[in-house]
Image (cartoon, rainbow, N blue to C red; front, side, top):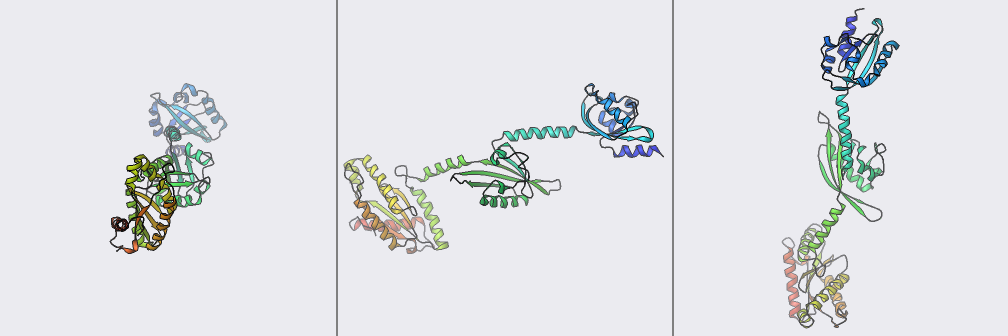
Length: 407
């Protein structure tokens, strides 16, 4: 048999290098890849003991390698090899005994890259576990493959148990459906940024800002979804508080003029689309100036506050009440024509007249009101300003006709 062909074949199939030992652990041949790996020339390693390429800390491995030669068995070992410049290489050695010549072929795999990658991944995992955000990876079937510590805590599971699970294992059906739709878009190559609201059985809710991006292969195909979510529940609560402050009258806590105009704009659009009618009422407390003049502005403010609460109660939650300015208020009555709104506001007027708003001073009040319904206007051109002006004209007419009147 031509043994040189065997050597040539072995040297060409080697991973990152190959060398050959005799039964005494002496190197009798090696290929060029092994020379490059350790930085030695072939002449420097030929006829040298395997100890030459092993750090002293690994001396105990030499007998183990020699045992492979004696036992004439295949095997493997993970050790460090020492380069000519004394740098250590994490290596994986695979032994194959060639019986005709009593030689041991040692195939070498340099593990340095993989060890470094493992260390980097371990460090990355530690970093991700320290983040105050939820990080996870799902495959193209929506199955979780990785979740950082915070996500595992949210799911009440472990790193091993989370693998292969899906959103329906952790979220309500309505949330799962939305997450599935988002995932489908990401798997088509789109990035997403969505707010996800999770309603709990106890009435509370969590709001998450979820960012997702596709993970691609070198050919551009998508194999996984990377997700990062932030719990923005508190931020949304604060935003809502700020929003409420911006749309509420500080004295009465009723909606202010700006918000009323916003609502009217959307109400008019909805009427044009769905013909859902509504009426606007502008009302003014009769002779309110005399209350301020007689009892002072502190009492006047108290009357406005008490009246606001009474008006909200009588109007009902379905409708909207706002303070338009001074002692002037505005009401939007939904699903009510002019005649229906007139009947309701007349009833409220009677209730207000019977109510003692200030027990200490025995103050009762009356109000005048003007009504306009959306179907009384040219709604194709109608604006919030138009409706309020028309209601104001009716209010002015009520005052001119003696007040304490709804028109």
